[in-house]
Length: 59
Image (tube, rainbow, N blue to C red):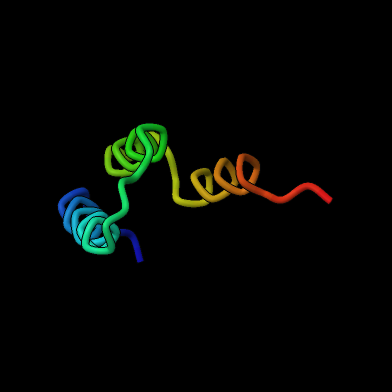
């Protein structure tokens, strides 16, 4: 199922609100990726790969 831009915006606003309710602040890099995903210039799969690469524990 493909989401419309409005649906993406609503979903991300909800998700970011839930993060903030817990007293957390998303990083500027993350918020930039969210904006790119909302606009369709980045996919959620791209976001996941970027975040996994950045935060994966190296053993």
